[in-house]
Length: 154
Image (cartoon, rainbow, N blue to C red; front, side, top):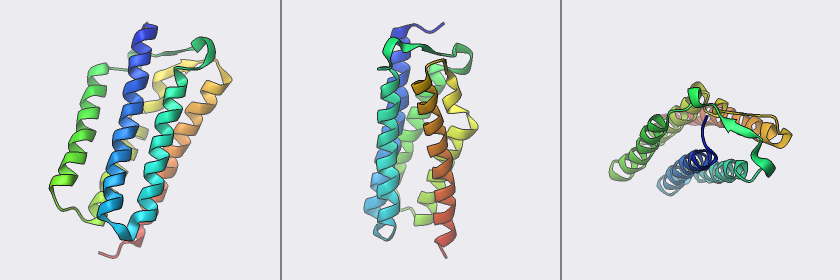
């Protein structure tokens, strides 16, 4: 079983990942003004997701836990490094709008495929609702990115 202190650390790591993704989307906003509205919304939503995740640690009596068998802190650290490296690569190299959207799609899909939100378990109604919102928002991001990709002609 994961201790409460470790749960708090893990929750903060998850929130930080959302913030790294938000910073990548903010960079895309500045680089691709023709897609500024799309990237601004995506950035704002990622920052909102970070806030939602941090709320987990504030749920009264914390009647939830992290499934130890579904979570590997080293994998989370590697994923966080991957996200940070993606931000760095984007800042150092010229990307196209299509490349940026494909990177976004890869990130959002990786969260769904890894069943990112299934590391938690609990019986608090607000907790379940929050996880459902996060999973739904991520699926929504995938669909919106696909729509945006469909608009690009080059």
